[in-house]
Length: 154
Picture 1 (cartoon, one colour):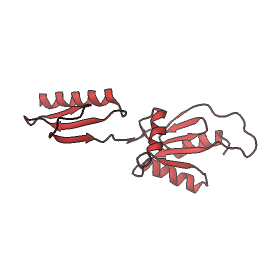
Picture 2 (cartoon, rainbow, N blue to C red):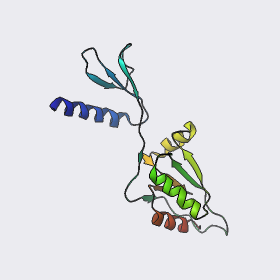
Picture 3 (tube, helix red, strand yellow):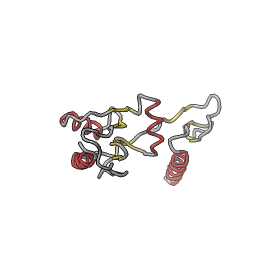
Picture 4 (cartoon, one colour):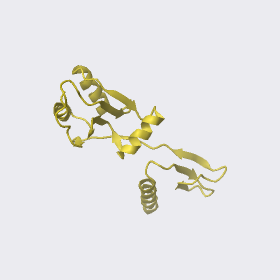
């Protein structure tokens, strides 16, 4: 049990230190021990690259950025949502936008390399991430989105 806890601690340390920008490999050494490393495993070792997992933001959404000054009549900021197809909060946001006739651009960060690069530059770690002009919402709730859109002139 102590060995398992130590292995998990090492794995968590490696994963947090490497973040999503670097590849992590899992492999089994000659003694049958599972190893994790940021370097390619030895030739012939069983294992492979670990896929980085994107999480859904849960809990209270966080809105950051400054609401725009009064815009000219009819001028509204662009809305862009970084999402995945499996995320329940992303699905709720899509439905909300559809019910309310809000036009937005959606970027699936697991299907678009360019979209994933944009998402990575934001420095966030989950989905959905919704940009309304210079404001950003991480997570989703109808109430918070309604307030955000109202402040943006929608």
